[in-house]
Image (tube, rainbow, N blue to C red):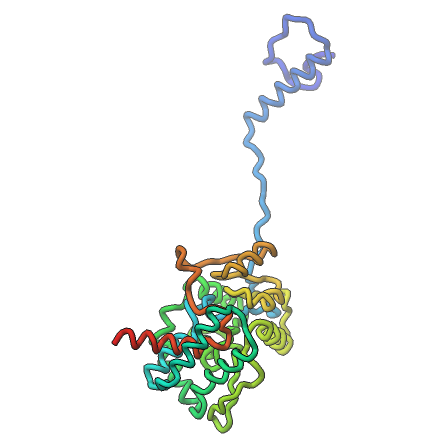
Length: 313
């Protein structure tokens, strides 16, 4: 078979040693293929682009953000407590009780029902008898004094991306709904789901409606809001720093662990959830009040604020 029957191989010198026709053809074909491949640009492999998220115009989607250490550095109730103490909402006789309750939560790391009830009653006693409008007005001032500068820019940008896509964005927090609503409004978000304190005639009674919006209760709140708003939870996103919010994160199609505690970080990696961390250094793991405090955050946070103020004197 002529060597040029299939390829133009005139540039290849004839071999002087004997070889079979088939081996000659194989060798010359390989050489020609190598020559051509060296002269041609390698093919560009197209990698599929990640799907756009948030999806612009997806009216079945919304985003749900935990507040403490997710949107804001530290606990909102801690900062709120600082503001209330500054305005003389606390009496010195409350200090010992508040301090003990906070120490218990820090050491126990669990939510004993009897202690939870005690903490809840103590926290509610702070606002009992005060008008809702009064606390809302004070809350606006406290936001400017202690909270505005503690919002994580990275998380704020995530929320804005959902807003820019035409989606609603909700805070979901154990903080009082009034406090959460103020923060949501100041950040330009849609609204807030928070713990509801009972009021009659615009005055706090010192009781809760149901229980604190904590852990599984958050997931139920998101589920109820999604049903009322006609949302598809598989299209929705949720963001939190705490393993206590795994029930809420597990509801949605796009869960994010933001500034996560060690338990949530481990769970997120196991589940393939996305992680975002806007903290720096080892200090990151020590920001805020322990999640186990739950509804004790107001009482404990206020006690911490009182102690802080006393040390400064």
